[in-house]
Image (tube, rainbow, N blue to C red; front, side, top):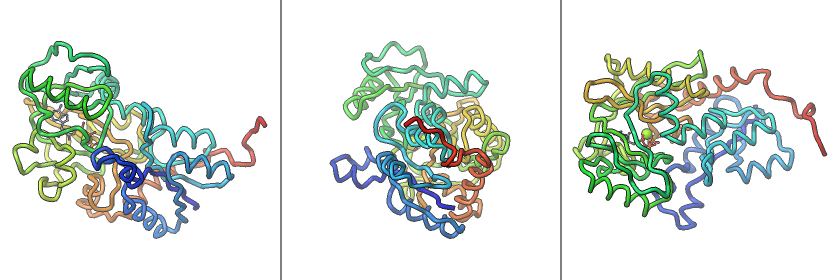
Length: 337
Ligand SMILES: Nc1ncnc2c1ncn2[C@@H]1O[C@H](COP(=O)(O)OP(=O)(O)OP(=O)(O)O)[C@@H](O)[C@H]1O
Ligand SMILES: [Mg+2]
């Protein structure tokens, strides 16, 4: 199959002056190389497209793809991760991973928490501080956790994100506001064990790939698996595949969340235990990082004995099962010109 690859690379943004942290969501060339190599090893023809602007030009030239392997995070807008899948939907081209609604939802942690909580998934109570608002009175007990509502890759998350009094909370909110505009989430701090659960498949076919426990080596990192801990994971974090009772509960919670949100092909769900030992949903990543060495989903797959190609094969298999017979062939698409 001709499989197009859509992605946003880190390098052009670094060159334009953005920092390492500001570009943490975007991909490194080695990720695109690794996916292209895996697709080749699976007998497909990988075609590197790029971001939404490149995709628009390719579609304008009537280039055709049997499937698009979509990693594009998008740069602007509240639904930036949805832009590529929405465009592909309009052209009837099947793609890997979730559709526009799920991707827009999952980018917004407060909205996602409200939806999954409504379906009985435990999640820390929270208050959302909107962009222009002063921090209100927070009707929750300290310690609290302060983080951007719509970022990923640990951006804006450090040891200081855990706050034990109002002054520290105000400081953390101010620091986030200097760094970047956008709503801020204040939640009860979950002090227990942390897991990330990989899910593969869609709907009733979805299954957990495994549960990885994230164990910080220093007390500062125990507060949060944030940006710096993720960057220097090999010195700061131990990853352990776990199958105990708490891990089994975490896997069930992750699977339920993946299904509630209509995630497709793969996702990674972050979970932490509350003071009573109950697993609570932190957030879901329907476009989980796929760096061949350092991304959590890849570390998890490796711990399960899977190669990188095995992981890509499973994602492609899920996308093809789901979209079989679905796309409208090019010649049957209506035109209004
Ligand atoms: N309410 C909380 N209580 C305790 N720790 C928390 C809480 N919220 C977040 N954390 C910590 O901060 C880390 C990062 O938070 P979160 O997963 O929401 O951010 P992210 O940047 O979207 O992550 P990712 O890199 O997975 O995209 C978590 O893995 C956890 O260690
Ligand atoms: Mg996370």
